[in-house]
Length: 238
Image 1 (cartoon, rainbow, N blue to C red):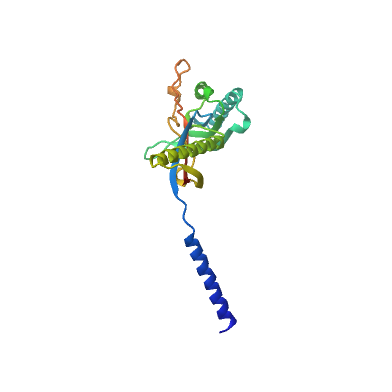
Image 2 (tube, helix red, strand yellow; image 1 turned 45 degrees about the horizontal axis):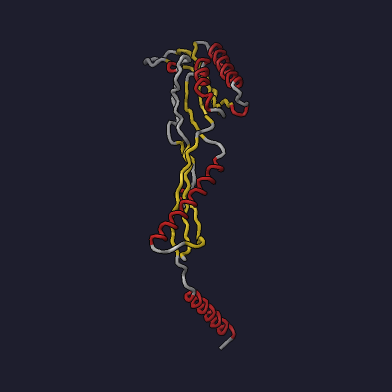
């Protein structure tokens, strides 16, 4: 028998011995539970996407009126304390408009632009959007209430989920006359990993006709941001 064959036999023997040793080691008695938690937080910023569209038979006049409206809106945003980095213009377009007759007639020109503003103080939202509409905003694409610094709340939700898992394991083990020991395995449930979800009234649509500076009661209900966390934990039974 050559050395190569002897070596192979030795490796097979070692592997068999390791398997036997693993079978001898008893599996710990475990209790596995899932813990979940939710945290509801008031949104602390509003991201607004507007549009300004101006029409006139003369392109130069339409552009001039458009520029005037945009300057007013941007000026209002700056007067409200919104930083330049939170004001973004985009998608400027100028195009002719025609009638819908068989032989279309040139009606004039439309100049339009998109404006995105991030407001860090949601309490200013209602009065500010009214001013924007009166200044020339005539298209509101979206208004989203959201939350910054989500990491802090994700960590908090995860910690609450871990406490919930421990409490559940203690209660379940006690029903069987057992107690729990150290955790054996801790997993964050991928299907329930913490995420941000606006739970209610997150998007609003407005037009110039609905804006009324004389309204005293708030018509905005931004709801809350829901942060969810879920973990699976296995504890040793004692």
